[in-house]
Amino acid sequence: MAKAAVLERLASAPEFTPGPGCTPDQIAKLETFAGGRVPQDYREFLVLCGCAIWDGGKLFGCYELGSLLPDSIDLDAARRTKDWREDVPEGCFTPAPRSGLVVSDDDSGGFYFLNVGSKKNGAVDHYVFGEGEDNAPTESWPSFTKLVEALLDQSKRRPYGHITRR
Image 1 (spheres, rainbow, N blue to C red):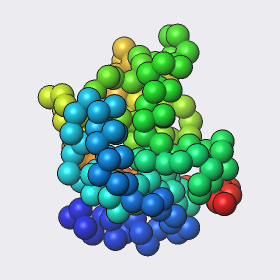
Image 2 (cartoon, helix red, strand yellow):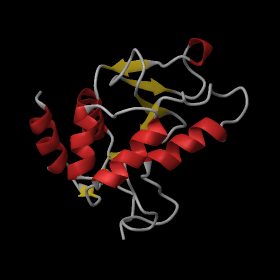
Image 3 (tube, rainbow, N blue to C red):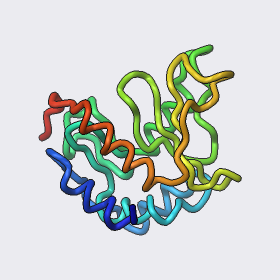
Image 4 (cartoon, rainbow, N blue to C red):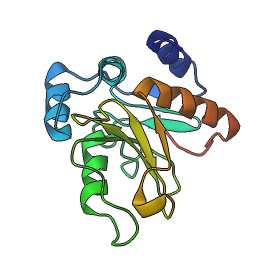
């Protein structure tokens, strides 16, 4: 499915709530944090949505705490990546790699990692708590767009129905 079609499908997801689109300065700061230029499909998502949540899924990007959701729910990719790099319980996971961003989580202790500036540039890996040999990813997608398709398909099967928006 083409990027534009995936973004249209995302926008029509139940309870879809985008954040404000990211400014060029915000994207530049996110790229500095990530260690390289983000792939074009993720950049387009950032410009259009900034971040997003829908009934059954969420995508991290640029987010001001409390602007869409209660403060306990953070949709900021840099903060979420920092947490997965620094606050990982010993023996549970290998910390998130240095080049890239956590772009979503699975609400059961795992996260989706967008590789930036490495040989896997643009691919997204799913790390699951307690699974994966030597803390390796359990699933991978070739692009952010393919991850979004998978998350939308998954959310059809198991919507949240419990997140309160502001």
